[in-house]
Image (cartoon, rainbow, N blue to C red; front, side):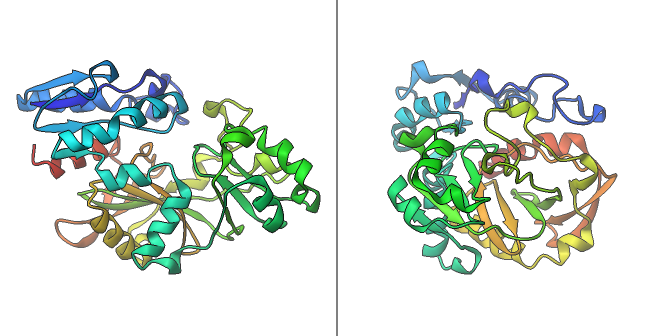
Length: 328
């Protein structure tokens, strides 16, 4: 019996939210519904379950979407490690879950397995440490958070001062009390790539947009006081899945593939600028190509190829990759 975790309602993406009318088809949406559709088609027994059942559930596999919305995270942190002891086959696995949504741990892990050439960061554990070392041009990130709600750029010298830092942190999602530990990274120049790796292959999306540096908290995808669905400030023309030739020239992807192998996870995506890893995650929103074709590294053939735009593949690649991982 497969135990399938029902997604928290917070992850229900409103219809019509996606940025292009071609993509009103449900690219995002609940993960459990995509698994249910597969299980029904393949005639596989499963049980849909939720937190009130945990950790007292049994089965051959556990599949769950444990993500980083604060309310959901507080729930799944209570249960995950007991579930992990109970199930030999579980997604996310122990290592992936332990690192998920913890930026200092992610960077320290990369260092520990020999990939420090891709990291550049400092860890600070409280606001006093932050005030001592932060400089103009630094990017400061809480250990947790998404959509830039816990990220800011030090745009002026005055924002290195204690009182100003307190004001900034109190406008973030986590406030001062829950912001630390945090990491400080340089302002990396260049394009940002989201490099997606599954059990099928690798593709990448480039994010080419100008940063809003009018206020520290406007850095990234936008100010945390703006609703996350309205926070993104980039255009489809400048954010797209890259070509086969461009993907082929990214030497970093094979090291990222090795990191994925070490972590023994079916899915992982990395944010990369100038060959430096900003962070990584086992969950992401499907990438809209905004072009008719994009590059793909096929793990079965070990060859680069061009894929014609395929909404179904993009919408289901993570789910199908987990299914492939467990041979279901």
